[in-house]
Image: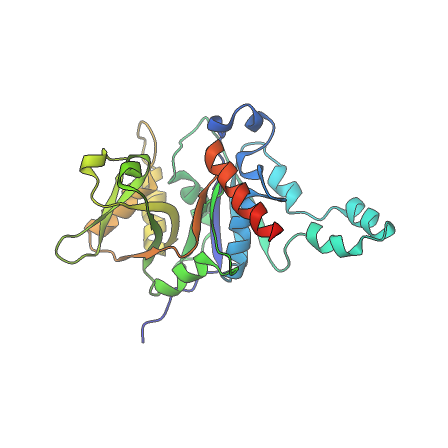
Length: 279
């Protein structure tokens, strides 16, 4: 019987400036924009907790403290709720139990791209462990409160790599990284970033939510030590590993993918969550 991946740590990248959401992101980190009564990133964190994650590394923009404030207890607020007879709200305001949070700053004037947050966290990881890698401005919503990351972990064999995917209408593929499958084996062969519609290898898109083994984490770190011009893409490291026959398990999501990176997606996420709360 093949063992599933053991994952207790997650890297959540939230260091972007959120330029597509200006001017509000001048004052509020994009990941902290509200969906219902929670910031976007908290839906990612809650999914991690349900999947058994006990240690989360946030890669934040230099000088940002909003996440630290959100994931810290506010003694004065708790005191107010206690004195005003609203003790039932204290638990909503508390930081999650038995979770260790780390905050690693990323200098926006230095190397950038989806591989860089992984490289920044790599020195803090233990040899041989696998880690979940996620973004902080999108999430997958399940009406039954189940965890999509848990499904990915359960489907990814111990010591291997996995990623979540969903399908989109063929006309939308050029907005995403698209999964390429080997024609002979049907296995993951790579990711094609924002291909023209007529050249897309499939209509399954990469959601940027991974389980990565230590070898791929190390490759990412070494890749980011190179002096290159432009972005450092994590999908390039994953695709190269697949070319070298490193297995990557592709797991379709069960819930609804909610991308809050643009205003229309954010509004859709609020519609889904608020309607659910009102039901």
